[in-house]
Length: 363
Image 1 (cartoon, rainbow, N blue to C red):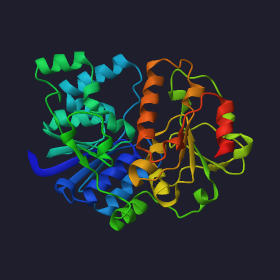
Image 2 (image 1 turned 180 degrees about the vertical axis):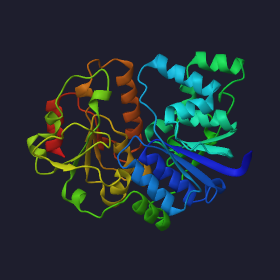
Image 3 (image 1 turned 90 degrees about the vertical axis):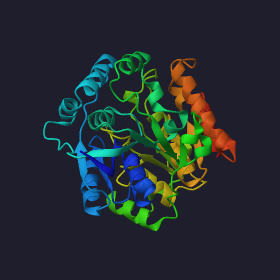
Image 4 (image 1 turned 180 degrees about the horizontal axis):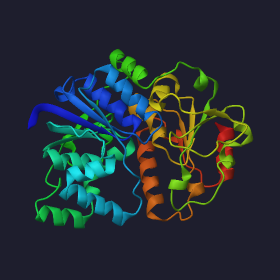
């Protein structure tokens, strides 16, 4: 039986939990006090965050799940097919047989992406209202659902199966004017976060924020990503970027939440105990310099707080083929961000390590 007015949030990352909290605390569409949340346990401190969510009382029920990393395309398509035809079995299979499947139905589902688990819930409960919310710059490119393969859409629309007939009712973004998808009338403004005391207090409590001055003492921030997960790149040591002489005493390396390899030695390390969005809100200014191959974290200060630190994207140096589709996509997105800056010259993408070093010296 459907519980009218009840919504469920599905979150795969800390930032998605952050934005779910924003929507619920601001009671968007009456979600405050009438929502459950599912959190995937694939990121650092996910279990602790889920426990804090339970203690907060902001959600009716808090569910935890864990999905395996399905890398092969044909296996992922098989999982999508199974989730469409047998959603309950798929949820149990993917999330674990002990997963406490919610018994009641839901009127609406909120998520950042049409992920496998969210799609299974839509199929199982027959949810007809789906709202997407901010998940970094990918959210501004248009509907993630449009990237589902043509074969999937054709087969399942013909058979009237799955979630392909469900339309997004809204897309909540911090900077709606930057949205590139269609139709634009679906785009709505995410509530502002920096002026809401209740939201800030809840986030600091739930994410276990610890006051510090680490980012005040370091102007250059290297945002680590997991390069082993990025295809089409040269086998370069990250020390090439963090051991530049002008940076040594001013650089802080921010570790990726899922990083397992040993960090570079001889440089200051932030292990990421505090959520990046909270650090950015508290400490990142227009004077800071953020460096990375390409990281969603580089967009956070502008998208959430309208601050404009210097940005140095190093993907040109890493990429083997400058003319492949992935490189072109990165170029489009970086240009998109650059165009949004009041001072576009603060967004840079050097092509060589020498050019990179020269930029670090100049700024």
